[in-house]
Length: 259
Image (cartoon, helix red, strand yellow):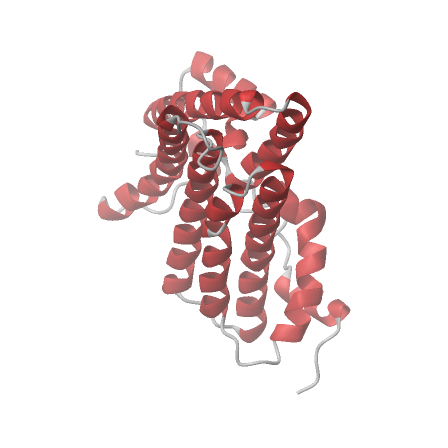
C-alpha cells in the first residue's frame, strides 16, 4: 500500500475544529507538534499498528518521565522533557491514525484520558523525588517527595473534576455539557475565572508545562550548585495544584454544567 502524502493526510486527520478545540488541543499541538505528527502518521497508516497500540506506547512514554527526572542535573531534566514531548507526539499520532483508518472506539478515548492522568502525575512525582535528592549522598529529604506527590494528586483531581461532569450528566440522563454552561452564574466568579484563564498559572501543573519548568529550574540549580530552585518549584506547584483543585470545583458547582 502506497503511503499517502502530507497533503492527502491533512484534510482527513486534521478536519476543521481539531486545532481549535478549547480544551481538547494543547498549545504545543497547535504550535508545532501537529506538523511533526503528520510526518510520522503517514508512515504508520499503511502498517498494522492500531490507534490503541499507539496510545499504550504514549502512556508508557509519559510514565517514563518520572524515572528520567531522577537522573541528576540538566541531563535528567532534558530526558524528562524528551519523554513528555514523545508523549505529546504520540497523543497526536494515535488520533490521526484513528481518523485515517476510521478505527474509533470508546476504549481508545478512555485509554487516552488514562494516559493524560498518568503523564501529569508522573512528571510531578518525579519532580518531587528529584528535589528530595535521592542520589546526593546525604540525607534524603522526603518532604519534597511528599509535596511533589501532593501536586500530582491535585493535577489528577483537576482532570477528574472536569471528567466527572460528563459522568454526572450521563447518569442524570442529560446531554453533554455545552461550552456556554461552563461560565459561572456569579459575575464575580466569572471575572475570577477569566482572570485565571488569562494568567494560565494553573497550566504549570500539567505534564508538558511542568517538564519545561523543571528544565529551567535545573539550569538555575546548576548555576547555584544546589537544589534551591527545584525545591521552590515543587512547593509552588503543590500550592497551585491545591488552590486550583478548590477553585475548579467551586467553578463547576457555580456554573450550569450540572444543570
